[in-house]
Image 1 (spheres, rainbow, N blue to C red):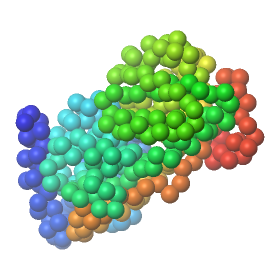
Image 2: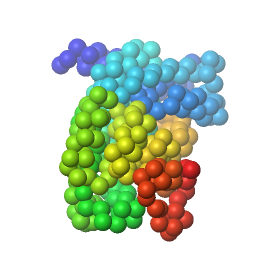
Image 3: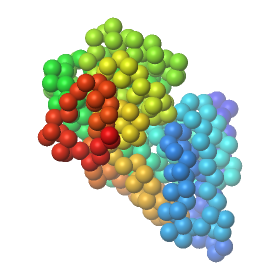
Length: 324
């Protein structure tokens, strides 16, 4: 066992066991670690506010300890390990942080936010009965969502048959997402052209590969690294004259062409409610993983103009948010 794995397991086992009893003590100040690799820092304030609405007030009976390590797996591991000795519960965003928490946190309660296919990547046993010490809010869990995304791209590019997929190789979610995408592509007569990146330095060569492979569009799975590079990806896609499809609305707002996306900010309220249940004694294993109740269609008309594309009126009428 690696040293950091041992340390994480030791801290998790030591701290998580008395959590329920400690939560019941009057005047107990609870310490919650919050690891957000790629999302806006304002989301930490939103989590703090939602917890306050449930009676957990920062500086009075709650200490929310935030970490913003970026998308690199080693830095996420280090952030979690640094938190474990000082917290009672851990909240994490994204698949890399979720899997790191599973590996390092021992028996400590963990609530995750915005993780796609949490069963398939091995984070929980099932959505209804997560098992273990982890539950949370999924970003998506149905393969049909990717088929809808590809269908939207086909509406914009009617002769679409070759789609590049920008893969982040070390994100556990991406492999499952691409497998889901392959099922959808087979039904729609689309050939996928995987292009891998490991850092920002790989982006320009990746888009060069897409062009030489005669890709007609690019699909961007919602890995933490890709989310941290949304503006660069959007700009490179425009420069390469490639319509881009995204899994989160922020990427379309940053300049991507289209996205079918859950509201990640809206996940914070349900996650706070799950934290409240755990604090009051419910085992995370018995708290079902929640899924988004809706996916919003984002379209960036300014990007469409730059790509000389006309968005079909029927698709535009279905959009929940249009960026001009």
